[in-house]
Image (tube, rainbow, N blue to C red; front, side, top):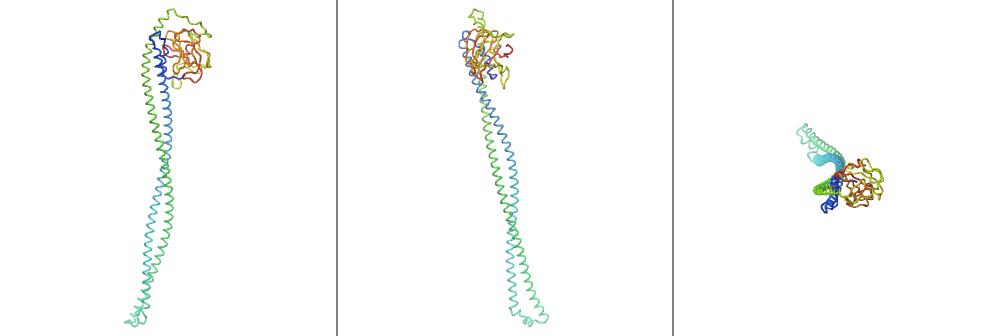
Length: 408
């Protein structure tokens, strides 16, 4: 059986209950009501604690996912930064080629115009030479002042024609060179433009990938925040429950003091003649302490801390309905349902010693009844906070649980 320290303390007081005849009427019922409320609150506290554990685990998982996702985000960001740098470089290169192409186009247009002008001048010069009266060889000879003057004029006309032709030829050559260079620039520009387009596509895809990762990260952060708020709320509720239990424990302690007083009065009256207990039905030898096992069975759980809680007795595995006998002679002070104990029987043996028998399917005695050692007091079962048929057996000294194996 699993109980917490709070419930163990409260129930330690409960085991001192006596009949209403031994003291203030209804005192036992009031005590049981307080302990039942404490038991219910402890159930809520346990539920809250379990939920805290679940939420804490979930927060750790989400935090791990966020950390892992941050690595993906960092890698995606680094890749995006690299692509954006490459894209910016290609765009600058493309801008340079576009500007170069524009300059080469303007240069080509200029040379085309220059070539046309030079060709036109050359044509006009030829026409002037061969159609003008001044250009007739005979006219040159006749108009010359001397033979030397005639030669100079003929040479001058020839030089002008040769110069115009040279200019036209050079302009044509420059035009051809610019056209070829421009065509080369066009090809390079097209290649760079295509590369830039592909890099832009990859950059856009990488940016979308980063956006998706960032969205997932935000979703996880939101989920973690919600779970953290739920954890904080659950802890607050548990603190409220604990505060309420503290108040009930104080009330329980007050009732316990009054019950002890009633028990002392009952002990004083024990020396007076009373109904004799039933004849002993002991079927096993008592230990050196004078106590016997409540039933034959396998010890499945010992006294002490278990799963973070105090187990204030021992568990004896038996089948449901197995007879449970009193470990020693005494007076029944509890017989009936009590919270996590289920159907409980508590026998007061005097001198502050009492034994408890929990999780019974039914009880065979009543409060105030005297019982002998080995006498039937209950039938084992699986009631209350139990995970299978067994007897939960406790020994308490002045209400405090001790290891039963020291008495058996």
